[in-house]
Image (cartoon, rainbow, N blue to C red):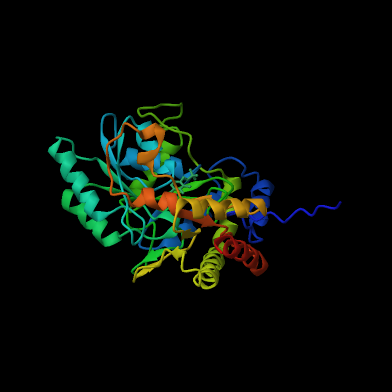
Length: 377
Ligand SMILES: *Cc1c(COP(=O)(O)O)cnc(C)c1O
């Protein structure tokens, strides 16, 4: 008997534009294989030009490294508390612990699924009452949807607490006409393999002035003082992006607009073809917000419905994934303080990320929607 293997559909695979190899080849031909070459500088410039708002970019080995350096630049150290959006990927929170600081988790609001302004305020007041002023806030534009920028930054300003803006999933998203990545005291991007554009692995730290960028680069390159020998008065890291990978990034920046358009089109397709399924709801854009729709997420009526769809897709060789499991429910953070309203736990139980790659074809989308519809019958 013949068995046909169904074409695998991935959640969010890499999608090269064409010029990446040219820039990588350039690195080989000029022997700029070691860090800090023309590709890094050009990639940084293209990020700065894209984000605008006078942002400076330092390309690093990962988004996680960017959060780590960002926290250090904001003065986070041993024994400090840092408030972190609970509904996120672990990489938003882990670097807080690298510095010997403690994450305090804050739940989400329902409109954008990101950190709740009301709970953030409550958390800050409560920490202050405990005699601890939080040293920083990590806010996340999850799945590419901008968080409540005005409210969150007003609260941060009121209490004079700096914000790390985790834009790992939100390159190409904007709020009131300004690009995500430009709102925080420090912003971060990720070019991990599953993100909207990728360098196979990499990230960037975004900041407001050249001096902060230079400090980030100094720390990212082993904190060498100015001397002919190796002299160190700071602990450093090996976090700089390689010139070879930056070549991939240069090529990817050329097609970023197309990638955002394709992912937004995926979202529109799913919404149009699944909205007659009154059982399924989508995350809508609040007025003034544009999401890059990194991943299209659906909410189903129950955990059982969600699992039914996920498993039915898996049987057809289609990758989907439950929404992020909130940090306050993770075993590793079970002893951390958290300010919770049940929103992210409910999203985790009922939500599913659908295949959202920019290289998806209409026939793929048809196949996926067909399976979901028959599962919900
Ligand atoms: C991917 C991601 C990161 C980490 O980026 P890496 O480049 O993988 O280290 C951080 N925060 C969020 C929300 C992410 O999705």
